[in-house]
Length: 403
Image (cartoon, rainbow, N blue to C red; front, side, top):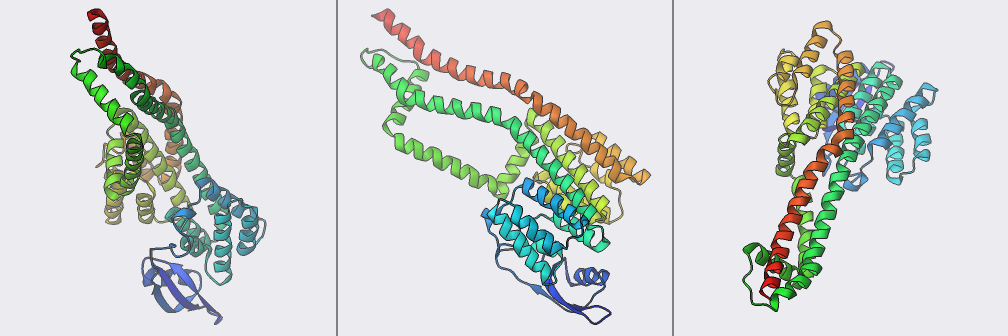
């Protein structure tokens, strides 16, 4: 969202100047009015490179764990009576990350000059819309301490969820990397030793054997080229997956691959349920919460779905009816539970219970993932070894028989 520079006065004539994030001038004026200030000047500030980019670059990313500890410590300190700038200074002295320390000190300076904490978080460029909006609502409602505790719990669950999924993918990733490494070593060093047997004997070789020999000869003669191509391929894939097309391709594959599909659906539904519950409990409007979720989730199909849901809910439709339009993304359980929450007026509580249910399911699935993937890996490795053995060893027996 754009950043606006403002000048405002309260009923006592005190002047306040600063910067604030908002959709437009009207929303900024309403936000300041709710804090007891009446605007005399509002002007949109244009920042090169996007929000926060002038202060912190791509390499200033802060981990979820650091943000979680920040929210938890700040909430405790504010509950103890410390002012926001003083609490930020104390936390900055405790953090081990030099980048995060600089960010917190700058936020502290912003608050001292009259900006709100939410404005400081938004300008830092490292806090997402979820954190900024929850803090903004907490400041307006005077319930910042409890909102920060709620935000810390949300970030902790987010960290645990991501850690479980990543941990489950380490095993197959390591196996595949080792298998590729062994394959390259075999083609570069082992196969040339075996092909010397065929070069001494004038014998016709099967097409598969000739393919392996030709590939091995090329790799052995152009080791630096092969190594460079491998690095270039990895680099290009990383760049591609960061593009809009690449992200859409990853999103498409993640909801189509049988084993991965179930995990992706459960993870995104768990994140939606917990984030939506946290935002509602913090006092963020429903439509705004749905828009925040559409930017928070990483899967492109879920982002598009929540943009559509937020637009239709804004027109007066119910959430569960709009979720039901996307049966491949939202299970029947999710739709029914949201319906119950809307009918009883306890959507936040219902979604919190549903988030716990999905998180337990994810925990169970990720623990058993290795036993599911092992047979698949064994088939892949067995097929590769079998192809190599048939292609190389069978001709050797034929040569020995001719001798």
